[in-house]
Length: 450
Image (cartoon, rainbow, N blue to C red; front, side, top):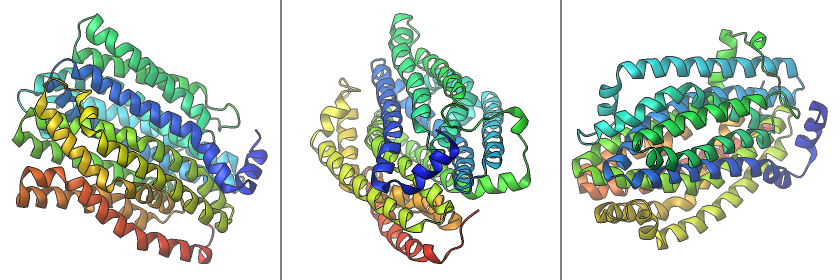
């Protein structure tokens, strides 16, 4: 598909059909990644409770590096979609190179520093002394895979914003499928335990990155060459304008995971393991909803760049409706089957099952609101309402979650920790409504963002 054909498709097709078509590969990618996370937890759960807890400890680091990668990917991707809407391909290609190379180099630096400070970092992330040996064994391989993980997330976001999520899906799915296949072989076949899980992740992330990199320049995607890497303050300013909301959201998610692990550690390794299992289940539950939102993003960016504000508005409300129905259905199923779901991962630890099922049910109460919260942030980010988008991105895991977590723990002990995410979701929804309504009303009065 030529850039001109893509422009016509993105700016003339019915927005509901367009969002759905673009969302399908993103949904598949997110679901496969979610299934991989659950499969990883399942296999590690066959070792012991401390290994599952170690997975939860390292998870906060993985969210952190993903937040930096998505910062570069979303920041450059938002700019790319608007540039393509203005039919400025050369400008878009230079931005794509700056975003990708910067992300990979940052990954190398973060991995090197983390190797030097491994044990202090893991203790800071919430590891207990009994969990620490398992966390170290897993963390080493995650650090090796860090530049590949970051490159994959950056490229994935860039390709989605070009309307080429199908090619991105191939890289994501290939890496996740390889990881699922390698887990039992390395963990049990070679007797490597949690080290095998870390090794499987590092290998699969490297393969997935190489696959998705090989897709660059095909089927209408932009060509990324080192000669296009022309970093300037203006480029990084544009990346920051589009990427800071994602960095705020994902970064606060990492901080929230650290604080949650620190508080949960007061109640034993089973509590940390239970929250780790629930986080994986909720990630899978969110996968299709986020994937659908990712189908909305290029439609929003292209049409906003082209000045077709009515199409942006229609795409937003359509996406919100679909996401809310999906989240409501999943919430009902999650509430009913909470105990069996948690038991899949640590069937021989009743305490993990008890705590995990309680936490999962509390989160299901507010899950129907998460679709609107997510789409609100994506909308504000893609129309380059940077400050409102940062505030909105900070709401669910920062502005509301952290106070709910610490205040809840101070007032009600462990029960307050269990209900913190539910309270944060309710607060974030009430916070998002006026932001979005104002932005929708104001949009027609805004100049076209460049």
